[in-house]
Image 1 (cartoon, helix red, strand yellow):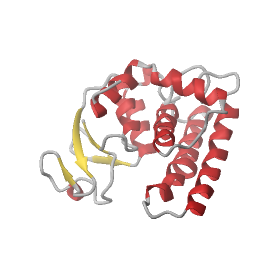
Image 2 (spheres, helix red, strand yellow):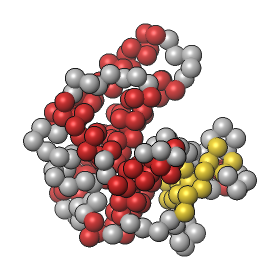
Image 3 (cartoon, helix red, strand yellow):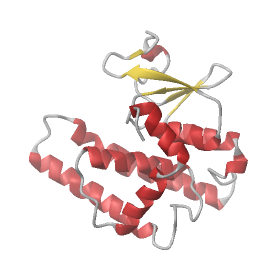
Amino acid sequence: MKLYYTPGACSMNPHIMLREAGLKFELELVDLGAHKTAKGKDFYSVNPKGYVPALELDNGQVLTENPAIVQYIADQKPETKLAPANGTLERYRLQEWLGFIGTEIHKGYGPLWNPNVSEADKKATFDRLTKRFEFINKSLEGKQYLMGDHFTAPDAYVFVMLQWAQHHKLDLSRFANLKAYGERIAARPAVKATLEAEFGKQ
């Protein structure tokens, strides 16, 4: 498999998952400004949508969109329990989390990537995101991870969203459960290896 990624982008989510699953994979860097890969390929020929992540499977097919990719990765190594079994209520709970993170948090950052965003819009965005993270903080009460005591796919996704919070200086320090949770995830070997691969540091 080959993961097309950009350092620090949401492609970090499947990157972490690939390492957590212990799967063999290649990385190919994508310049999202030029829409070119490190090998000079037109990225639109890989993913016509033009954004990462894209996971090229061994049969040549390309899978896109975080929720689909991370579930595919988890299902390649069910023994890792990165996702509950298909057809179970727990699997639908996992999909519920992925949907919430993708639509309410991931996309919620949109205005902050615009260098011309007004202070009013920035504040409104911070307020919305803070409420979403407050929900996660409450959901973590008495739990190590979102689905209980075992790391699963949504945890990798939230970790990336927490990295974005730091980048945009969104203050989440008052959420004790969330803070401890982020530290637990950051300490995982697969996460350290992902940060090393993307940024050259742990």
